Image: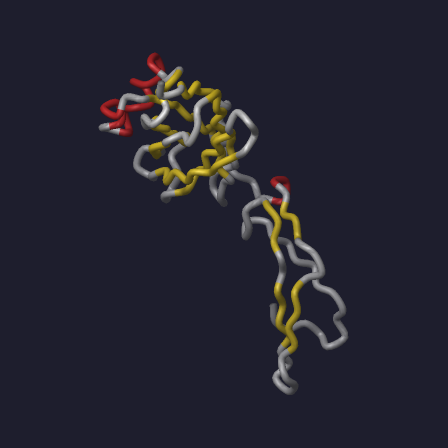
Length: 177
């Protein structure tokens, strides 16, 4: 920001459209052209809320799990084919494939996040790149232990499309015995 009067003691900053919802630390530098620049971090994090965002188009995020790698050969068609045969369980050590679909398709590739919650509560995160051609992305998951896992899928949104959360999925990872 430039052109603030020398007597200014505060500046109202509206982050709408600039940042995704979340917590941020603010770093500022003051330069007046005469004195040595002065810099400082905020005393605490700045929280940007979803309602701070500008108007955006509502979006829908869907996540399907399957053990059938062949079903993902053509990602633009895969979501329709997977619906009737989603994974219910998998043997430990075998991969599970997550297919994510964002509707409407984004104008550019974006990243959705898969949060995997273990039976004992620990979480792991996977990133899934969602393409702009048909709004789909896929990820291979190897669960590190047996038991019932929950898979949550979310997307933070951007200037065009609002944030979205898919319905959680559960999958039973069976012992290798």
